[in-house]
Length: 180
Length: 197
Length: 196
Image (cartoon, rainbow over all chains, first blue to last red; front, side):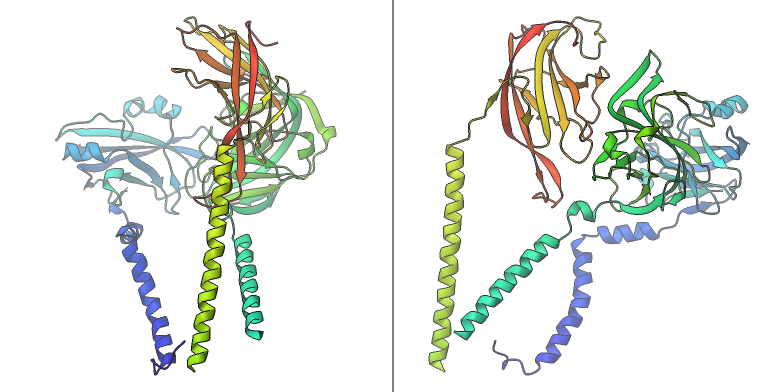
């Protein structure tokens, strides 16, 4: 190796090493073609919190939680929560393209319950009107101005407090709603 | 001459290092395999997504389960291992769809797909945070794989880097093999009823 | 100074030449072997029914072939159909419970319009679930025979092999891959209803 061409080999060595620390992350970000930035943006986005009784425009509709009823659970120590909510259609095409939904019941400790696959028998018995309501996503496509009324039941332990309904539509992600 | 010897040594050493690196590179299957969480039968084993406890284990030569159309007898060339456990989801509702019996010889026996209709079997129920629920796992294994086995339970068979419970099973003797076990549908609290004959 | 420089240059050229010749020789030998193997394929052995065949992942013993109007489940379909069935013993030699591979048994020559066959577990008279390691099982593979075709008098089946790669070429993962045909089996087809 001919080292005489470079009068400060040591200095340029450290300079190169320092440059690597900058260039490598930049290369990764550039190589991901924006996906990394998108992922980071989605990961740090917090859901829009909607106060009790208020409504929020999201993914082509105006969403509102109309009821969060606690019914006795079949298993000891459990409660069936019946969440009823409605969507006033604003942009039917956008809403149709945004399905399916991701629904979960969230408590103050951050635990998430998914809806029960079948309508709970207790809902059918005590709230037959709500048992008839469709799940999110199985609701018929509606026209602008219509209001879709939906319901979902959850089985949760009795000690769960501060319940909120988390609602996300695939077409509306990474945004999501947290209905109080 | 000295230089030649030196370069030859360098080549051999380089070849050796490359070979060692090639041999010691972890397999892709190892890199993406689930993260084991060790535990023992009779204790609660906590993974990040769920907790599981193994209660009772029964051995039998045959299983009877009445299905809708007819009562089915399930025979085996080995032994049926029936495991009763309790599962609780931690942060979000989930189903468990992967359960394996890891025999002392390293052979993996998936939970029996012949009996997936039995209530409580993996995949048949959704587990909720804060609500412990019973789960049934049934394996079909040769007699030689009963003692010194581990039970592997995970959320899904294809979840790289997710945690998997590795539960050391209490020693079971072939003297404990019952001639037959009858399973039937239970109620809301206990999804199945097990009768030893 | 110039002498030394010349000698290193000569050394380098020599090294380059040796490496080049070695590489070329390796390529030529490997290519020659591949051509030779392709030109002289090893004949696929014809195995008699009842003899065990090692396919790598499985040990399979074809027992007998028969035809009938009832599939191995014992539940006849509402409209009359004909099934051709092959009974065989199957042992899983791999370390995990696995379904019988799709290339395990195929008809020779292939029959156009034939639906994929269904493998059954004889013990349950039901569609097969994974076969566990070290626990041989009797299986029945059933082809739903096309309506326009007459049932054959004899069946010629190809038994496909599977081989294990510790590191596959794509991900470096360990898995089993379908290989070449390892055996040919010829069986007479008898007409009957149910296996006994």
